Amino acid sequence: PFPPNMTASEVNGYMCGEMNRTGRLCGRCKNGTGPSVFSPDLKCVRCLDSSYGWAVYLAAEFIPITVFVLLVILFRIRLCADYMNALVFFCNTVSACLLYYRPVQIYDFSVIPDLSAVSILLSIYNIFN
Image (cartoon, rainbow, N blue to C red; front, side):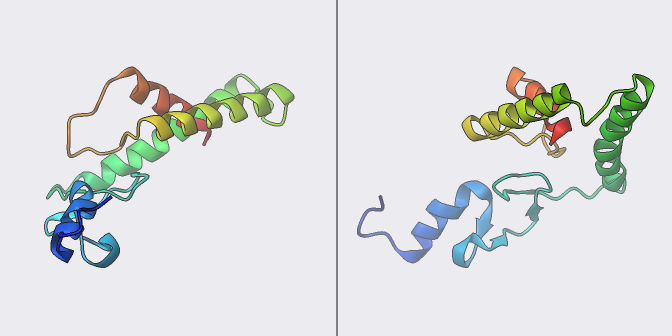
């Protein structure tokens, strides 16, 4: 896959450049970047100097699960019922397929969020993951 005359730094740039990584086996993030929390390929993204980043992270984690628990309590949903097992299996299958065919970063707040249909479906189906 590599041309025979590539140097080690060129191979490193080819393999790690898209993920903003450097070093042996792409083990370090480049300066000014850090690993994305929910990135399936551990891509490094630009670090933001914001004091409210932790609040956004907590909101992105706790608001969906709180809404889900309230819906379960409010509508008296039995989580061990057969139809819930089928729903969880279906959601896991769909989200795994969507991640395989088009990896997206849902919680990457350093860029404008992608509002495509795949991102919306992936965020809905990941509630059950």
